[in-house]
Length: 412
Ligand SMILES: [Zn+2]
Image 1: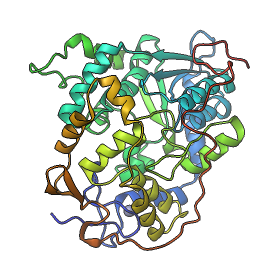
Image 2: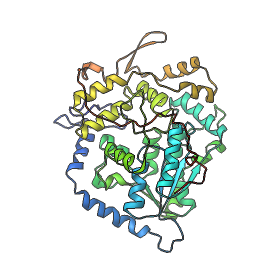
Image 3: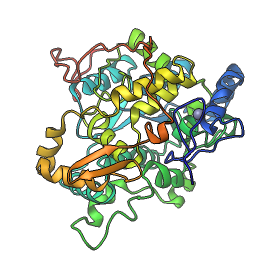
Image 4: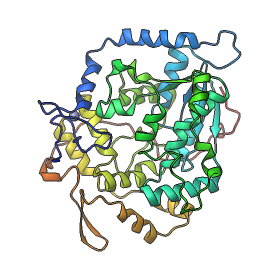
């Protein structure tokens, strides 16, 4: 089937989450995005207040809800809504993604101090993490599998263990990117979405095979609770994006100003706010996305900004062209940890180049024919966008202040 591009944003019918294009040439993601300007958000916030009300632990014997957090993304915004706007007492949970940047560690430490919350960390043993990473990289071309699996499972396990039935997430990716649901569907967390989309159809149930050294005990920490456990404890996960007009750029800027959220520049995108807590996400992981899917995070960022009306389609295309083929950084950190050489890394990387988007010219020589160049649909135009993102630090932000340590006292 011929790839069809949306006339408004930079996504096509080839988007891995799946999207449709209507008879006006507009994609389902853009159509659902229009709801952001038509829905009554005051009314929707009241709805959210009514939903969380029964979960308030009035006796003070337990937390009211669980909030999954990290040292980046929308964590500050979500905790601010939950704690300060809804007046709930959350238990924050975080999964150690290993490749934490000093900047992200500071952001996470500052988060628990600024909002004065309890937090628990899931820190899976290094041998299992390494085995899983090696396997997921080799077989699925995905170095992020253990992180995506851990981040989506640890909050649910904690909800069961601590008998805290409400989990509050930020935005739903399927809704935000491709308009898989309407905001009014008020879609909630499911095991199925996690497996099919968050984990690209490979969950802990099928990552083990008889051909490698990965064993059941290595994936125990990634096991999603059983339906029996979920039902018995009435566990439910809701998404704030269904009740609040989601705008990551504006939200991050509010958090920078009010709570000292730190941001950083990247080599492969113009957005300085997302994923500043990880060395790999915007680097090796993003390169793999380009190899496999023919587009990378900068296209997601540009599309988001086009939909919010802060970039024209032409300016978005220009930004994609400027960043998508840039080199990833910090590759050596990953090589050293996994114990492989650059040659081995490139060998595996090349196996995941999708020939739909990459022409092989000679051994080790490829030409990008991807998402943004296909049929010249996205032609390079020289426009200069005036969009501004604030980068206030370096990923390797030097931790000079002893109050910002992960396992420390915390000074309110
Ligand atoms: Zn679109």
